[in-house]
Length: 163
Image 1 (tube, one colour):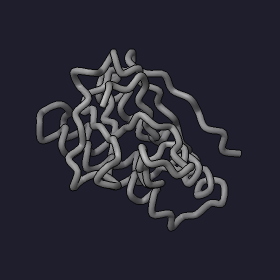
Image 2: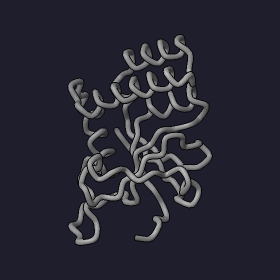
Image 3: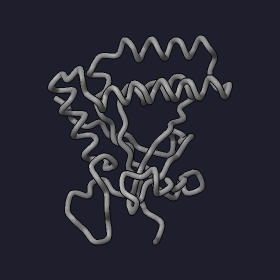
C-alpha cells in the first residue's frame, strides 16, 4: 500500500489548547488517511469511531445538545488526564502543571469540547507516524496511525461548525 498524501485527526478545542500551552505546541494524535469513509468500499474499512468526520459530527451533536453524559466527552476528559499523567511521569511537565491541567479539565464547559479537524501532510510526519497494531484499530483492516509528538507547524487546524 502506498503512503498517504494527508492524514486527518479529530480532536477537541480543550485538548488542542492544553497541548499548545503545556506541551510546547506538541500534540498526540490518532489519525488516518480518510476524512470520511461513509460509502462502503472493498478497499477501505473505516468504522465511525475512527473516522474524523464522524467523530466531529458526534462531538458537535453532544456539544450543541448539551449532553453532559456524553461518552465521547467523558473519554476526552479521561484521555487528557491520562496524557498529562504520562507527561508528568516522563518529566515533561511539573506536578504543579499536572494539577493545573486536572483543574482545567474539571472546570471545562461542554463548549470546550467542540471538535477540531487536524489536516496533516504525510510527508512532514512520515518518520513519526507509527501504524497502529491491528488489535488496537477500530477495524483490523483500517489504516490508523499514532503520532506521539506532532509539532504544531506540521498540521493545519479547521474548526468544525458547532452552532
